[in-house]
Length: 167
Image 1 (cartoon, rainbow, N blue to C red):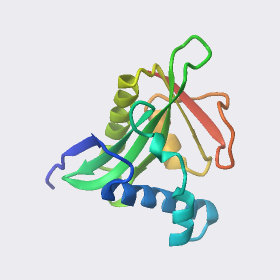
Image 2: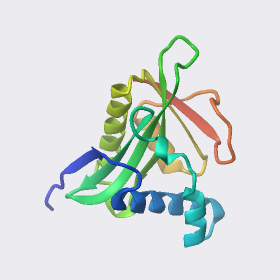
Image 3: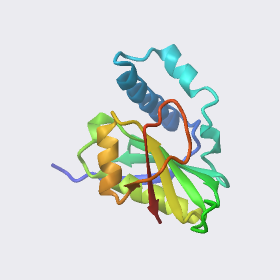
């Protein structure tokens, strides 16, 4: 098997590749939560005014992962604040996703590295994230990448567990 090359490029969230990846991400997480396939209308509604526009400098960064040139995944970083705890600027990791066909090829860890580098470039010194308990694969990825559970830094309907890491 030929080793595929991974690349991670900053991209606007409204490009065709980024839009398709964001739709796939929302479809997967919503369908898992609802225990049924999400409809196109539900995906459209979920992506409307979802704040993804902030995932661009100076407030954030959005990366598209490509494997062998094919759009394979995405992720974003959003600057939150100075942390209020003397530990420096916090960034939130969000919308981390790899299409199922590309999982198990080492791209998830490389995507995490690229997103952490993007957060550092924006001035972040700490990364935080929230996720659901049922997203076991994502939670395992975060722990493998050095994230530890932390107290909640925000609230919302799809937030069960919070993680953080010093960058």
